[in-house]
Image (cartoon, rainbow, N blue to C red; front, side):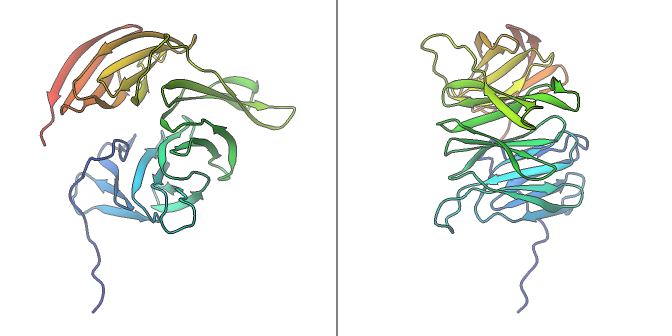
Length: 291
């Protein structure tokens, strides 16, 4: 008997917060992790699905680059190897083919993020590793030993560097209860990128479990949501904590910015829409998601 071919799948478990992305330029296309597969779904046609296969364990996180050129997917640590390698696969989204298989993370890939110009991919693991890969070569250009699992990664705006052809990059991340930034600048003398750590200053005794992050619409603040359902605001230029305010019960699970708004998904099934800037934010609208 010939094996049956899978035509399409329906459903989404939603037990992981970072395995569903919408295409940045075509909002009718969704990329979602389902088991060991990455599924590219056209929302206009239930039968229009592409299955990207290459992981040997469940997909733990997905990221799509700003222009929609690449998709990156990370997985749980493999049970088929002597050490629990957690590979990251980079896919060409238009052609639906794999471009790179990136190694170096163990146990589980916890966060992925493409730089705004799609030149670099940052990945973090449950083993405390943060790696940055060059998307032109697939090689590691920087490695940071965080010592604790990094749950969120986010690139900041590009800034002019010492080399006119190579800007400075800033990567924000939450490492344990710390909020960190890593500045990656190109050394003309050494002819490679160097990374320096610039931590954010938090109030004494402030301990939070961060679950998501985004930049404010005006680009001057880093917003972080927490497991107790609040948002923390940090000033980008000074790396200083500015404010906290409650937004939902049941913990805040994820957040993103779109246009002038910030959206927060809560563990209570709510989706909140916020507007504001600096330390001043207000609830603009909310809905209760069914399920």
